[in-house]
Length: 180
Length: 204
Image 1 (spheres, rainbow over the protein chains, first blue to last red):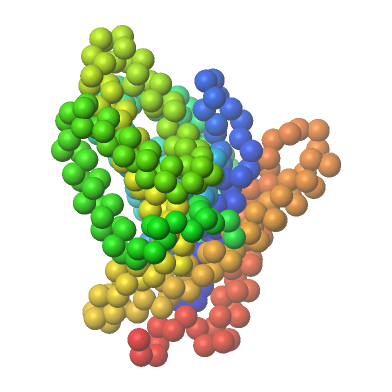
Image 2: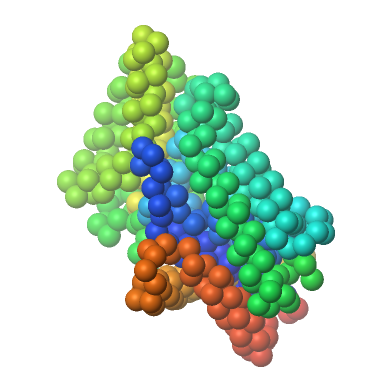
């Protein structure tokens, strides 16, 4: 119990710290930070329940007023803005990543690729696009068009997440709880 | 630690957090039923007046918190400018700005502690079903404590990387950072256990 509690807290803090790791900027100023990579790693490292809880903790405290989202954003305004679906999607993404990771028992690299794609891209963009379509009063296709630029960055993060998880597994396999 | 709460005391600081949150829920829901550009324009001026009444620096801080929305405002303005449906576009932009500004107002005038108190109160019914909320409180405290530690550590690692490598990418610190964090977690968990655990075993 103590171990889970602490792991959830530190992984959530890791997501916050990764919001600071700079960033390469895509066309028209879309910054790509490591934050959503942290969300995927919550799932691949901690598994579904603990990973989802870590992402939930991060989001709840960000909404409560800590400016932890990349770019120093935070507060309840996030729930009224066009990114609301992505905010709600963070814990879901971590949970789905962990869930898939626990079930796809190939090697860690391949499993992490599949899991972080299903969680960090599919499970994140579904609520993300729906939220944006609702707030901006556009069709789902139009909303997806607006965020499509980010998909490329997230696919890059899927690859990085795979290699990072593999590296952690090689160094200390017992730390990858989704596999133990 | 830095939060989004305004250091300047306003009349809104005096209202309890739960009342502000309830009011925000009601107002935000009601806002989505409003379909008139005229009413929405009136509302945005009211919200601006609410901010300005708290002083110039408070209003500037509020404006800065709305700034990340500009790409969406630009896109909607462009789209509805092209389709010649400026009224709908104006409604969408105004509704979004009012909703976010109202929510920011609550964030700016409520301390983090008060927000966490409300959260813990909302979780309290779990205790009735025998689920202890103590681990939640400890997790929140640990999380807040670990953020500055990890930010410091990532800055140190980035500096070490930059001093030794020609590349500028910060991505390479992620593996050592994560491993160090997972090791820390082990130590902290042992320390917690040695001091009586997270309180799930004793009575609530």
